[in-house]
Image (cartoon, rainbow, N blue to C red):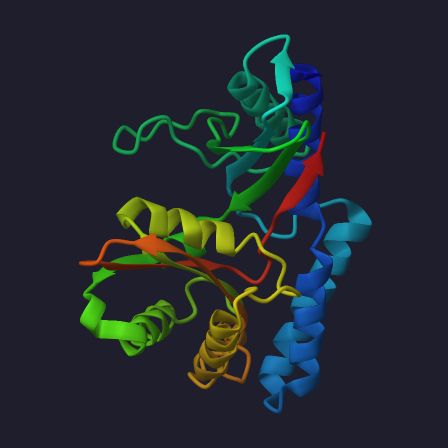
Length: 280
């Protein structure tokens, strides 16, 4: 059994909240640069150039990439041999979010109640998911999620008879209807299977996967590529001004489901697709 003090968790979460909002992930930068090199529409190419320059300014001057610094979504993988000491892990995570958003001068976007909309003032509480895994490590991923893209996400309970064509139609239609609202080019996270709630979680996890990595199942890896090609034919383009780059990647995660169901969730993320991780 290995002890991890909650103070380590707080410090790690604090740093990740700041880093995720200041520094564009390397894989996203690569996708943006690749897209810029392939664009034939001059306006789209110019917008991609501005997006890259904005990311450079944020990195060089330690500033947020975007004014919407998101609601903190946190994935925690707890090794079975880990013992958390010194307090509550949930309190430690929220304290890290509070410190990160305060010290990093990040916009506080969380309201205490969805209808009585009073700001909490420190961007807490985070949305936290826990997973117990083998080992004696603690892996934490912090993903600030802006709501320009979150609001464009959808879930649908398809019938098994709808099959893969129904799944593809739903995903493509969701992106088409989103149009410029999620600040394209986007990363599209797709969850297929499980239950209503599990499909949504799968889609959220999917957007955390590096765009350098395809689904390990060749069938779904090919489906990711096919969907990306079809989505980029929509012509929405960077920031909705047209072009060949509506999405940077489509990431699919799946789970077994009931014989009577085919749940599909689409979680859209903006071109920043912020996330940072630490292993303690």
